[in-house]
Image: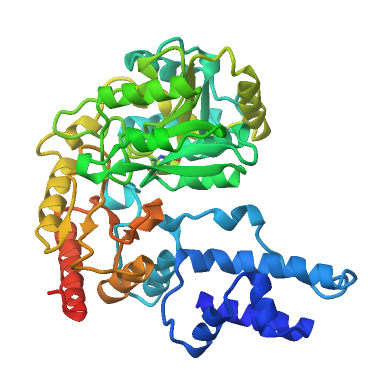
Length: 486
Ligand code: PLP
C-alpha cells in the first residue's frame, strides 16, 4: 500500500537524520495527525490519486532537505533514483493504480472485463484490411527515417482531408505526422509553454491534455462542461477563467469521456472568445467520424481564418488502428504571428527524427474511399447497438443517469450522491474490480471535480456488455444496502 510506503519513507528519514517524526512530516507536507491516523490504520483505503502522487513528491522534498542538512552525504551510499518533480502533477488514471490491481488479479487467474480504455482491437474491432495490406506491402520501404514531419503522400492525404472538412489554407508544411495524436499533443505543449502560462482545458477531459500541460511547465485551468446541457462547454465559465497568462484553449470534440458533439453555434462562440483574447485553439478531433444518429462533425478550424488553430486527429479510433500509432496535427488559420512557435514545433519534430514509418503508410489508404466506420455507427451497426444497449442497461439502475453519447466510444454516467455518497472514488473503482472483476475509471481520473461519475467504454459485444453492466448493477445494489440508501 502506498500509505505504508509513505509511512516507511518518513520513519526512515527520521531515523537516518535523527529528527523527530513531526519535523520530517512537516518537511514532507504531511500533517502529523494524518500520519498518526495512517499509523493507527484508521484510514484503511486504497491509495487515492493524490496519495500516489505524493509519495514521489514527498521523497523528492525529503531528498532535498536531507542533502541540505548534510551536503557531503550521498557519495558512497546509492542515492535512490527518483522520477522528476515535473511529474508530481501528472496524472493518468486510465492506466493508473487500479489497472495494476487488475493485472495482479489476472496473474492470479481471474478474468477481468476491461472497460477502462478505448482500445478497439481486443474487442474484435479490426483495422480495415486495406490499411493492414498497405502497411504490409510497404514494410520494405519503411525501414528508413522519413522526413521529420512525415512522408509526402500521407501528408497530402491529410491536406485533402482538411479540404473536405473546409479547413482553409492548409499546405503540406502545416501538417505533422506523429506516433499517434498523443505524441503531437505533448510536442505542441512543450513547444509553447513556459512556467506560469495557462491553458484552458475542459473538465472532464481526456487526461493527457492536463498531463501534457503540467509536464511542459504550464498550468492547466479547467473550464466546466455542463452535464445539464448535454456536456457542452460553459462559455461563461471559460470567460471567467481567462487571465493575462492564458495562452490557449483546448476543445475535445467529439468528446472523450462524455460523448458530446458540439454544435456549430457553440464552436463559433469559442472562436469568438479565442479571437477576443488572442488564444490558440487546440482542437482534438480524434473521434470525428465516430458519430451516431446521423450527426455531422464541424471542425472548429473551418470557422475562421483569423485565429490560430492546431487540429489533432489520427487512425486510432475512426480506423480501429490504435496500435499503428499514426496521428497528425495541422496548423491552420492565422499563422503570421506564430512563426516562432512553428519553428519550435519544427525543432521538436526534428529532434525525434520522424514518426514510425509503417504507420504512416496506413494514412493515405485510410482517408480515401470506402469508410467502414460508417457501417459501425449506423443504426444497427455494432457500435451503435452497443451504445444503445449500454445506455439502456446503465440508466435502468437506480440512481444512475447518463447523457446519451452522440459520438465516440464512452459513457460517463453519474451516480446520484444522495444514493451513492462516495467519498473516495478510487476506492469505489478498486472495490468494483475486487468484487465484480470489472475495470472502469473513476470520473476524477478525467479531472472531473466531484466523486460522482465514472467512465466506461461500450466496446465489448452485447453478451459481455450485458454481463459487465449486470455486475456493476449488482455491485451498486450491495453498495446501496451497505450505505442504507437502498
Ligand atoms: N485524444 C483523445 C480525446 C483520446 O481519447 C485519445 C485516446 O484515447 C487520444 C487523443 C490518443 O490518440 P492516439 O492513439 O492517436 O495517440
